[in-house]
Length: 152
Image (cartoon, rainbow, N blue to C red; front, top):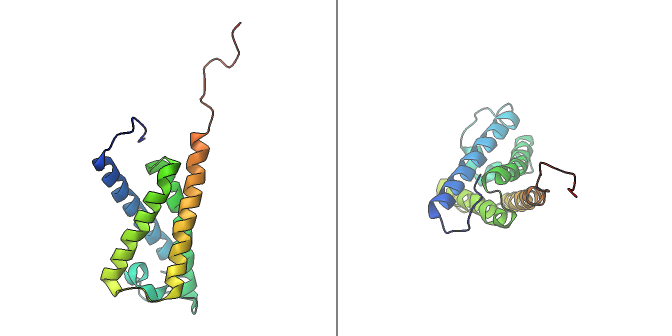
């Protein structure tokens, strides 16, 4: 989708960042709704941005952790379709989580929970590694040709 001559195209980069961020929050919302929404009395933005919801001391906290980790795997698939290049996966995955950190700072202050930092660190690492692996598999595929027999 975004292959072509290597040129500095800031509009393309910004649109890819916006697309990745929107897809990431969309999938996180669906996962949180499925995993946490059935157990929480009130499903709000708190589960997205408040660091205190990511805790290992409650069942809802474990569901939130599972949603974030599953979202990183889904995000790797988004990297495959939006970014398409394995050398750009780390940049875009880190950007998604840095923007998430800034939104968390705005919503509830600096996250002071070690669990929040571990979950988000694992999430960015898994999104990057799986995304790079998926993109590399696509980049290394053989180029299909019409005639597979060698002509003499």
